[in-house]
Image (cartoon, rainbow, N blue to C red; front, side, top):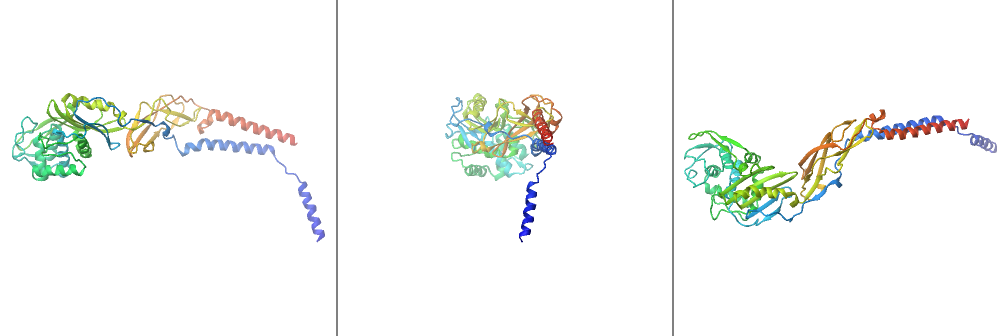
Length: 441
């Protein structure tokens, strides 16, 4: 037993005396290779995983404020209702009961589109053909047959009063029953200060609404895509009927607003040059809203919407999304002296999330695969802005700087500066390995 332990102890002593031999030259080459591989992987992997970046949320700047002072309007009653925020952002006597005149017709046409086949032939009754003094009419004759869709175009574009009566009778059987449907519909939408007694807005002491109610009615009516299309149709030819020839008509809304830029839908109404109304929708740089003007003049009806649109961004709480003075994001560049280039936009764009928080704004970028050389100002991609889960804006992305062609490693997104740095490190490691090998010898 004692002998076995002695042998084991002697072997252990020999092992302890044995030295580990290190080949410094091979170790240096292995370490240099490892650094090279890591450099390639760490340079190329981010590119493989994804190109470009979404907007930095810190770039979003708040804008607009409810209650901001708005300029004076000619209209006695007015409202600007943000469809993005689902609330008014400007009011002037918005709850005062006023006569709507022919903007009543948007509800008539909406109910006709919702309840009638557009190709249904409707017959004009003696009631529909009664003369309404000084009002716009198709001058239908009793027994005259017209398509429902043609009558809707006539009611919206040229504000034909008799067309709305034919439509109402076609939906409900009589004008009275149709008016009951109109009132029932707006009450369902929450309109408490509105009462209609006819289909077309003909002046009557019991036919009234408010700017607030009409904004709600407008919002619901123009959710119908066909009605939106008709509202902006420039010209339309009504086919010949069994009693009349073709009729060409032009859009009264576009004429009354002088082709207002950003207009998305609407309808005019009037009793005289000094008794006018209008309801319209507009969209401008990510902002969508409805404007209702009651008790306006013909001139005011043309100028007041422009006045409100001009200050709409100041009145509506939201965010400036793009700023041409800042680098909004960056993307990868292949074969360049730098592996990334900053991207710019041109002009301001806005977003109005319903929750009024920056988190309600999303920006998606689509950026081209870039290869040097890249010139500053070159168009390299697009961006899309979303609020309330709907696209509210888009634009182009431009290179924010010049990127010249790089050295051979830049094909793998390794910059010239990185190439120099890693080259120096690898050279030092190899030299150190060589020196240590010589010292050992």
